[in-house]
Length: 376
Image (cartoon, rainbow, N blue to C red; front, side, top):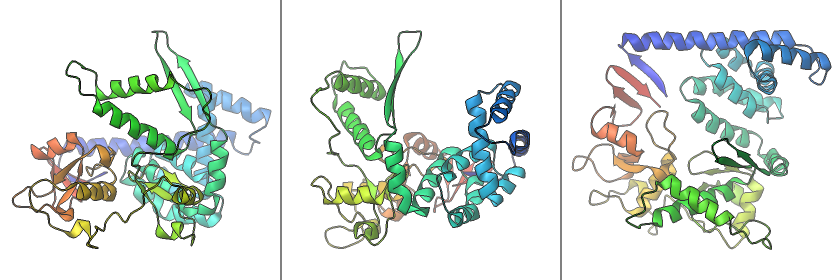
């Protein structure tokens, strides 16, 4: 998301403050690197300096060490991105995310290809959007290492429970397979929405949480291992991966996570998945190019739109397509019910458009809000 143009003086001032804040981020990180630079990361002097920086900034030592590692990755391997950071075009939070994700790469050419595009993307998008974009780029840059990375992280899986002083607590499940987590989430969504008792005033989130606890408190100790997904989990898979031509990863419908090629092929030969060409119907026609009668798109068009868009199309919004409403860019009857006139908008941004608080251009590339123009 980016402000393309505005006559709002207050917003212009805010943009200037944002840039100065990003430059301040750079100066702080650059000074930290200078202070700890040249020291062995495992040495006592390095640890002592990390501790000193933590005390000076009121950060934890773990936080300082992470920022140092992330910033060193960017400075040493992504020079164009580091320059953009020094100029205030990307900020410290973005650089930390870039360093975390780029640190998984092994080859110089992979860093070079990423560095060519990363600053331009980061300038126009939120940290959440940048994180998803980086995950895809890293997975696609070195697909031959994806299986190795997966096995390494999966081998560190764990469950952790923390308790609060108010009688509640949190349950963390880390480093589990994305396809399994997506399956669990879809099951909880489906079960929570199926509860229709009129006297049940729980929110959807509360129902999901209660169902989750109910399922875990009835665990069969004799059962070992996760079941294969039995609900519809959308994954975009290159045909070349299924054919074994290359190892490009599968990407989730919301573009949030990836699946290594070897796992995609394992799923493909199991009995569980149902594969089909999403954008082509049984007659061989492109679903998105057909004009349908009536105001409401048929289910297969809704699914195609949600896969195509991935998330809400409002700038900066990452509500996944499966939780969005299907909106007509040009309202019926002036606009047709067809792929090029329909898109995903979450309920909030759909209402914002409907009540004309935010007006998109017909192609959706720009949005006008008062005196400000935004772009995706």
